Image 1 (cartoon, rainbow, N blue to C red):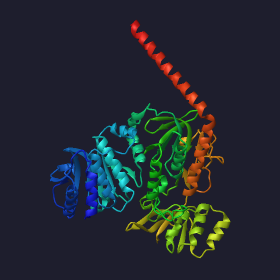
Image 2: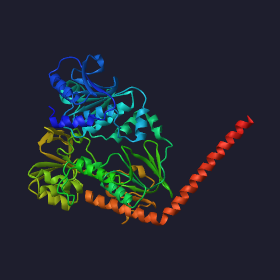
Image 3: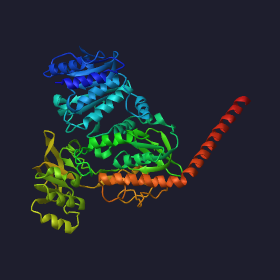
Length: 550
């Protein structure tokens, strides 16, 4: 199952292990057991720091194809039910490396939050080996288990545990359960898992409360193309820069094929995200990943408060949080993003040349998408929820004149189905007759609007009625010292190359501002800090005086 090349690579990874990690497989019989035994034995054979055992673990493990990881004889809380091959192979490798002492790549404040969570927590992650979003969830929860002895994390291959999948009516992956109850479903980031953990145990928010970083020149919020461009341009100017992001790459990371980034003929979202990370690593940028901003406090010196409770004082802020496509919220949507479900006809339309597709949404964006696609694909079916289209009449007339465009009014999308990892049909309901129809196709373009990620700035800067941050030609917002760039702003075209340019522009504008205001802000911050220290000293002297009198 594992090639010599893979085994040699594993041997190199295992060379620096600090603890002995044992794969403990539940005793019993199963059709897939011999394959799993061979798989784990091969991995364990690459290093004396790895071992494989078969043992009756009672109720600790789910089945004869379930195993856990022990580190120096101690249960790590990490479990796998099934054979973690395909996309999940990296999850297994990272699990035993982290269990053996390799540093966990989570921000210190996040580690403290997870470590402080109370109560027994058993996470189950139902996955498919072909799912490219699942490993992020599995790996995050595995790290949670290593950080907190109260947490167990179990990867479950849904294809091998169909009875459980049917029992819980699971229709997409990843599906995350906490203590038997649905916790998260579909594509979810580590930052979103932290947010949900906060809902489960609000007390962990105090883990980083009161912690402060040194004064920053620029704090960038967002890790997509605009945010990374801002951080790099700012660092190149010699400024003290911190970037906060739920993940590097942002929404771009979910795009499978990119062919419109000038000078780069073809790349993928994960590859571009890796390149953005690598480029940023060449500069002195403090990166706080898997974190979200709770709020921004304005003033001459701004304060960025993180979801962990940590605070960052900064002279300028660049907001590059992007926008997310408004989702339908139907089964089969999230789990098939990049495999037939798309949101940008300009970006992804060419990949459906000569194929049948659907566009969900009858507004201007939906009809414009249908017109764009009509010249590329075999057929376009437009689905509008209301009896009448919301698009301009001139657009509707043009769409109706196209022989390969069909418009369905007063219909509701019920679900998107897939086979062999690709979309194969859409189910919809005629709202008048309540009759359910199935339309075979290869792609579904959701065009029901964009949602800017700007809610945390309510009352801080001016936003449009759509929630976009209003900016001028230099990316300046209504609040001095706060800039914005990319898809979160009123800039009309949402494209990677444009976001990169806007991020660079915002950085240059912030630098220009600091050239004239930087010294004043430094003096102000020093004065405020000294005043604060004096107040604390006065309080302490008063307390001491009281103690003496007592």
